[in-house]
Length: 173
Image 1 (cartoon, rainbow, N blue to C red):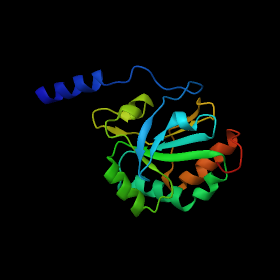
Image 2 (image 1 turned 135 degrees about the vertical axis):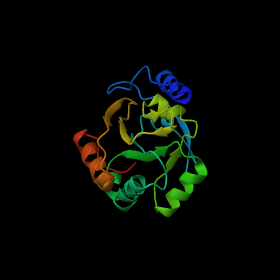
Image 3 (image 1 turned 60 degrees about the horizontal axis):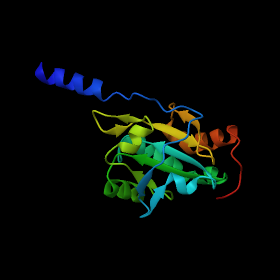
Image 4 (image 1 turned 90 degrees about the vertical axis):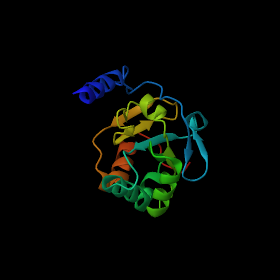
């Protein structure tokens, strides 16, 4: 009973107070990528739209399917003026191995403390993992769409379709 009460209190205290909404400025982030680079949202502002596909855990079934979809069909996304990432609370070593094994030709971002995931309102605090949510950010830094209905097997096609629906320009970044 003592542990249940502690868990419930912890979960209640950890609930997010402000939800990220479409039209708001996306929270800035600086995260390490599986490509060995540091990626910062502010550096991309004015240059390209940004897509962040948050996922719960490297090497799990759904996340592997989603990553392979983006790796195998990334050309559909690259047809747009967009920079895209997958991101999780996994550490950099795990995400780097996951990217290599999935043959990802795009960066997987690591947020091991969950601070950015929390700012994007995708963190499940008691587990320190992200929900499977894809966030679309315009060139101006504003949130264009928050997609919570992710189908891992068709992720790349779905992202490309959403970019088209949002009016993101075609052409490479």
